Length: 554
Image 1 (tube, rainbow, N blue to C red):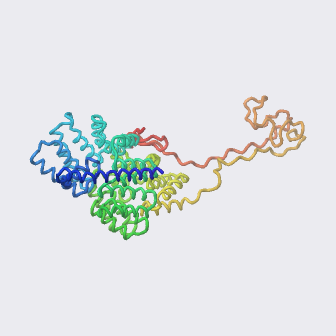
Image 2: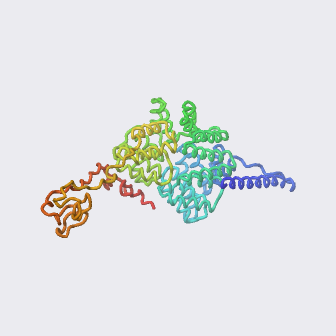
Image 3: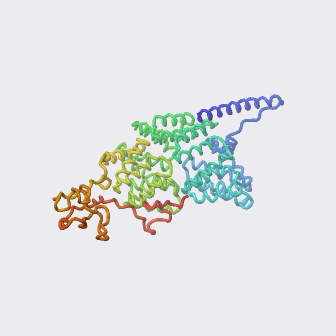
């Protein structure tokens, strides 16, 4: 019902907009004037940026060219410098070309030189926050974003920057508040898309999908609608529905034929369906357009799973040699599984110390520590990655393998099964390993552990009734229970319960009565992870048994 109401609202709003636009077409004729010319590519890109929507890449290139030309003649225009810097950042991010980032930095700082932050140059500061986020410097992104928010809390474009920064720093509560603030100030496809991501990160899958559908319905251009459809494909893939994911990625590609995220997503889903040749085709096309580090890693693992080891090694090496500073998580996972795990753990510790504590970073820390032999410490990070809310098959698999190595068979069985239940084809290389590990663990035993089994009642040895220790009349004892059992004897203070003290039994009381069987020894427990030495980890990292959370998150 909620989704239907949203759809009706969107349709009514769309119909009203069409009627209004149609009426405006006739106004210039009624006034005897020609209609204004349609906006050019640079203007379209500026309009999209103002609305928070992505421009098409040709329009974005036109905007950059237009501002560069203008600034050669008007070098003191701080606003144009800020707009040029933001356009460089967007182009670098969408093309995976980090060479645009230094250009963006120079343009944004030139804007601040022409008009300092103290004079209210919020556009340049906001641009520097977005650039820091693109580079994976979440602390700087947060600092710039909070400066802008403090100066103007109603400037809505700052909240997407803060949302990414807070998530990158592991402050998910603040990230959720940023989305709530954005929704109170702005609307449209971009806002709905960010809300869908927020729901997904919290594990609210139905809400995420419904909100992502609303974002797709609100998108007005192909450049805006294609990412919305890719988001829908990603959600379908993550919940283990590759057929639906293929359809949604295909819809995006019908709008933008060379849309790299759609090609990569469809390649991933096709691999899960066993259509390896088609998957390889899409992956190669995606990498030709956008060689993101995570794409190189996923494509390499698909090649390895298909027995194309030479191609896999080439992709891994390409990742090692071309990765930007923001690719640390992908590099850590690469080294942990296909290189030097000890180096991977050291690399991830350094990244953690820089403040990168996203859920992906937390999971990567757990896996790198485990692969490098630091299994006890790894479990604390694995718990944090899986218990925050996001339902990730990869995270569950990593936790299950760590628990299996620690001998925690019940927990390992549960998390390995959960990984395959969330998405049976989550990785062409790792999903089969999860199945093998689960098979090795076998089915859980129906028997209770010895320490949980009910104890048999304690019985005394059979004795002659004439000795005064039997169960006949006049002995003062219950059948099968020695005199004074279960209570201390007043004749012998401090006597152990259940031991015959000789009270009222005569000489025969010296005959020993069978004691209760000794409590069975508990099976040797797996040693709980100990807190690591302070010198072995950066401040704020978790302990597997203390529940300490990294970063002091609330």
